[in-house]
Length: 472
Picture: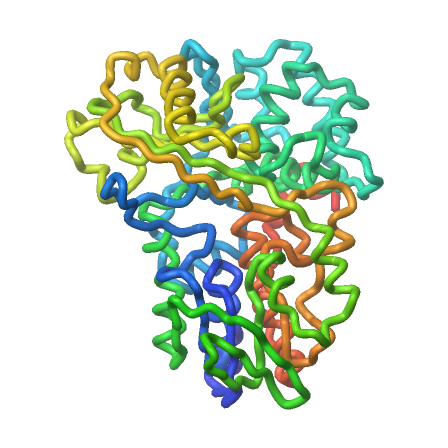
């Protein structure tokens, strides 16, 4: 957070933020605290962007657009939660359960051993991998531990095969972890992205690998960011799309529904494709070309309501099938946790990089997922499906393919009063909630530097523990 001196001195500058996702909220909260008069424009009727929830008309239930989780290494996201006062709305887990079809479970959890050996005892006991798989994975982990490899254009699947990984290790370990974390197939992921996920979440420390799951719907979690801005004199304009912006040496003019708004500064915290559509004619060819280099990957969330409890697990990784994760919402959400178990199960299944599902109908997807759920959870075989819905986020994240980092722009632009934020910008992190918050804080820092009153918002990375202290 800003230092006390920066938060007590007020700033008369006006700031527009376009985009009410995590990037825009993070920038808005930081700069509102620093004294800027913030007006945030969001085209939807709620905040949170891709990390949001709404009342689904077909079911009458409040559903998240997709389940989002965080790790202990997400230092800036945790800082944002503390700033917004919702850090107590996250439940933490130190154990990961892997389920095979048929229901056999393997658990991965930390031990007292120093990092990066803290998960070794549990890893050696897991039943879903054989000894050859485990030896190969251990060799690859040892290769990744010292430092993050450079981007040479090689995909991580090629890297894995070059490092002697078995097909089962690739399918049940590397694919399970990285497709979920990066929302892309292994043959499209750059080596540095994969290495960062592995080093930050598995190797650096046991604390870094803790998994946090929100206990409230996502919009309830992130609407507090809007409250934070309002309490500091800012405004939140929902259902407000920005059609264009015109920067000049003294400020920026925004146009929304034929109405012009004038501000001293502007942060564009929107997806790269939205930015590309409203760039002013004066924008550089470099920025336009950078935006054209991005492509996206989809995520699909399948929400099922059964008439009985189908599992006593809060969450699980699912192997060898279409569905990859199970989140037992009736056990996770505060509003449902105290319900009698006879009231049934509300479960969300997640499929990352779900290109195979994009063209399928809701009925087809529900049939596939229900059939697979019965393989993993025997109690689901006798359960009645009461209702269901499928939410496809077709352009959920940018694809972290080799070379894409060269096209990720920094927050500064050719216009001295316009800045960029978004998980697709140059944050040093992939397209995650942590990356989105980092982008908002980096944009806020760049803006305060331009205004002559530089303020630090970015929180340092979680330090390594144990033997990982020997490495950078």
